[in-house]
Image (tube, rainbow, N blue to C red; front, side, top):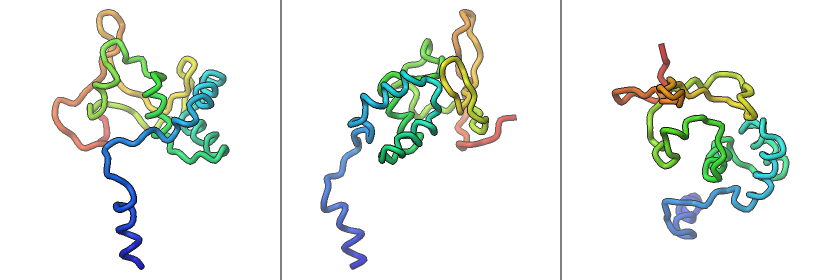
Length: 135
């Protein structure tokens, strides 16, 4: 019985590298909710989805919103969305949620303004472990 439990999944579905977003069926509701209350944090939106019976992580909500072109990050002048995955940056992640403009922010990505005031992200010059302390 144990063996069947472990092998069943690979027999039932094909292996693929991309799954559709868990929220794709709820796109209209999520987008209308974000436009109604743009200061929602990712955690709060994930909690509202859970109340509706849709169990997703705050990361899944972030990933979905990014795909929809919705972001609170002000880094779009120098960086395209497709260039960011895998890029190491300096960020503070243990801040309490804070209102930044019309968004609630839970992460502070660190950067400096260029000569035109546009954000240039701080990046390590060598490979470092994720989650290291900044000092």
